[in-house]
Amino acid sequence: MPKKNEKLPKDQLIDELREELPPIWERPRTTQLTGGVVNSRTLANRMSQSEGPSGTFKMGRKVIIAREPFLEWFSQLIKPNVPSDSGVDESKGEGA
Image (cartoon, rainbow, N blue to C red):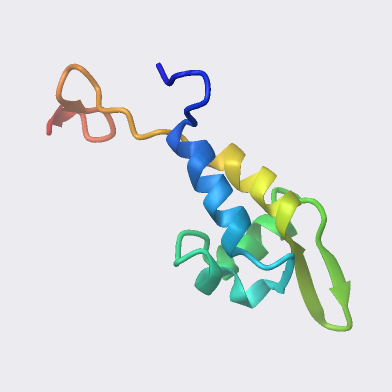
C-alpha cells in the first residue's frame, strides 16, 4: 500500500504523460506521442464506435485530440500488471 503522499504507478504514468503531451494534437500523431502504446488507427476505430475519448473535435478534415479528456480515457484502459499467485497464465490456461 502506498504511503499517503506516494502515488501509484498508474498515477505516475498519467502525470508524466500530462507533462509530455501537448495540450492538443492531430489524431495521427497519437502513436508517436504515446510511444506506440496507443495506435492512432486503433484510436480512430474506437472513436468511430463511440468508445474513444471525449473532447475531440474536427478542424477541416483533421481530428484534434485534447490532452485531458484523452488522459481520462487512457487511465480507464490501463490496469496494473499484478502477477498471479498461482504462476498460471490465465490467458493460456497453463503454467508460465
